[in-house]
Length: 146
Image 1: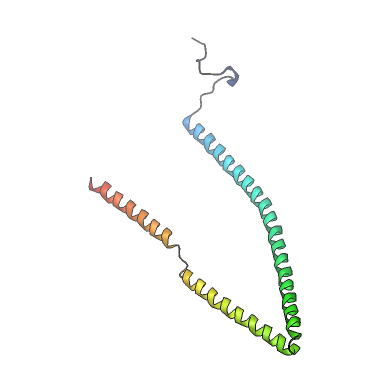
Image 2: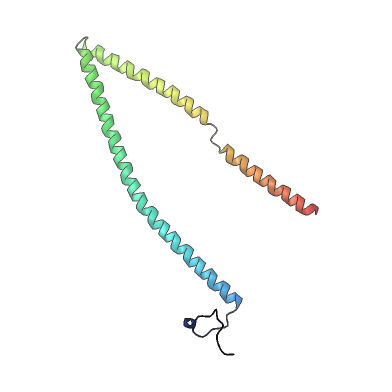
């Protein structure tokens, strides 16, 4: 009965006697290598995405700067339009007061929004973690009582 078992492949070559410890060591080495390779792949992918995000953020920042200049130009145009009906200094003063009033309102609304978010704690997550911990404690108590 020197025939190989039906499950063995002929391409495997001669079968070596391998201990369980050696098999576990090989599996550990392979898993470690696999995890390292996956981490390297993830790092490369995130680096590429980070470059794209950085250039996108720079473009958005540039757009914001241009929008700021556009807004300034519109404010100047408004002053010039009002200067047709009143002295230029009065027109500039009226526009400045209106801008400060809008800024004040935005600041008040923004402060209210920030106050509503305080305190900055993940309340739902904390509650969930406490419930999980209590479940584990309860299970441990029930396990000891048996």
